[in-house]
Image 1 (spheres, rainbow, N blue to C red):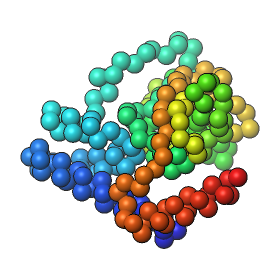
Image 2 (image 1 turned 60 degrees about the horizontal axis):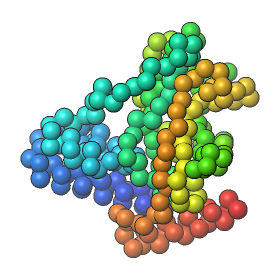
Image 3 (image 1 turned 90 degrees about the horizontal axis):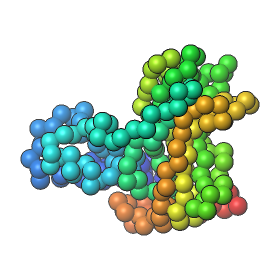
Image 4 (image 1 turned 180 degrees about the vertical axis):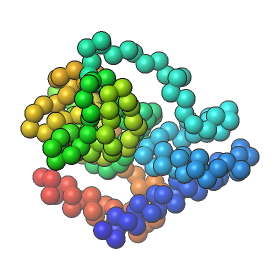
Length: 222
């Protein structure tokens, strides 16, 4: 646990320094702390540094969802779930957070409770379309989403253990009943590259700890 905290703290410090340095370069040091924290969290979850810098240049610090064309869901769709992060940096077997947006078009509330065990999860597919991992990590829906409502949330994601090109489908599972892409939830696949982790942002000690933890985790998995 101490090793995990060490790595997380180092990554957070690295991203915070990156944000502060970028702000000083683009003379945006007066940016509110809330906005600074927003970008630190986005970068920690793998958001593109290039987009962050382009936002600073243009003076628009928050991503504008209207810039991206969104295909309208089918009229019989019960909802839509999509990935918000762009230009994701994924490293083999390295757990991370992912921003998603959930919209509820149905007449029922989407929530995670003992009575309604509904979770956001995912499938990984190989480049040739074959399933690599079907039962992805579950993340509880952070709060009830009523009919006509929407939320943005971070979910837990573990990339494939081997580097390569994959497709990710984020979806919702109603435990013991169904995967909701089969019952009208609009989802899509995102083509993503998974890279080897090179230890950027970590000290030599932290990198050594990370490699030991990763090797132990891979041994347990096999």
